[in-house]
Length: 268
Image 1 (cartoon, rainbow, N blue to C red):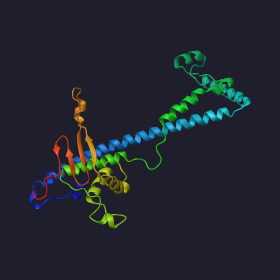
Image 2 (cartoon, rainbow, N blue to C red; image 1 turned 45 degrees about the vertical axis):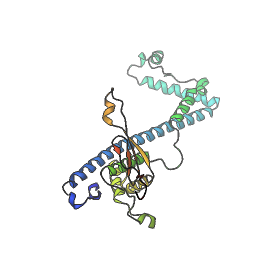
Image 3 (cartoon, helix red, strand yellow; image 1 turned 90 degrees about the vertical axis):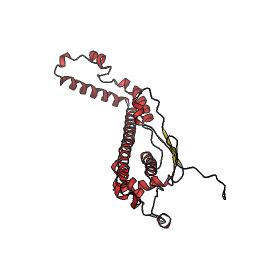
Image 4 (cartoon, rainbow, N blue to C red; image 1 turned 30 degrees about the horizontal axis):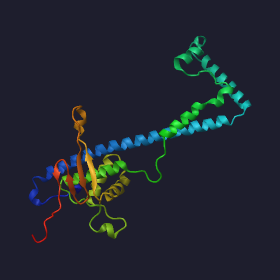
């Protein structure tokens, strides 16, 4: 799909065209792989947040439920615990050799039932709840930030400029202003293909790509860190810094200047 939408050069450049398109496709594939890694990291972080949030809620609910028991109910619960614990010991291969004090020493765990007089002293539930709350802090209100998609869009725009695809259009000429639902440009379709290859839903890919590119009309800065330099302990990695927009790649602080303004007075 990317090869089909990548812009063709003039007919005088037929020999270099396949290599140029192949180089762009290979770079786009690499971008999709890195985008997939960022998506997985973001999803793992969200899943972890939800698990801590569930622990905090469970600890709070158990604490509230325990505080709601009267003394008689606490004694009933203690008796039920002792009966359950004895059933556990009876099911062991060697119930006669079971030593509660030894088990507590080995595992630092109160294996025996908790007495009714101590059931309301479960302060560990309070600490567990507060700790889990701090780790599962709810995200900010509104739609979640598409951090991975915005990163991929910035990388894609710089990639386009590096391969001679300038400017990077969001919609076909004129359609963006004339219609509420503009027809996506070839660049949007290519970025959407990269997002899909990285795990994005096919239905949302085009709208996600268009939204991400729209945010890049103004100038933005992109730092590209060389991956190989991190493997060497004696090398202090230095990033390549790009300043770009959809219209152009303005500067590249490692490889030189993309374009500079012309300060020559008119008429000279």
